[in-house]
Image (cartoon, rainbow, N blue to C red):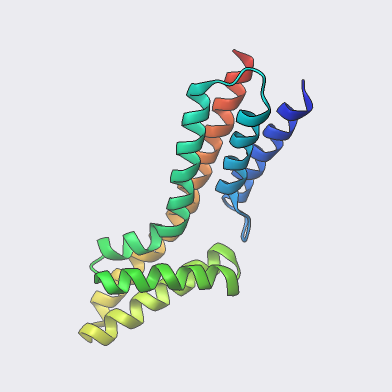
Length: 158
């Protein structure tokens, strides 16, 4: 097995692990692995390359925006959803990865919706949706990055 192939496999495994480990950019590892494969491989599979890049980008977007989209589904306003997305980024950086992201999104949605409507039940519902969205996104990212790894292994074996 070529050193480049081993490096790609290592990056794709890091992508899967990084999807659930705090502060690790799982989807970015997967995207870098696919790009390394495309750049360094002698025989590039167009099907895998397109699948890997699109799936990696979707995983990245899921990481960034799942909480705010779920907040909107739970009844939060557009402004609250936007604020939740921004708070999630700061929570991820300053409060410790996905857990910090979930806390920041939940708190932002609850406080903002409570200030707007004064209804703790409505605020709690929107906050719960956003928290489930953030936590569910980690699971979705793990499945997406794992599918990139499996597709690559199939590509090199077939």
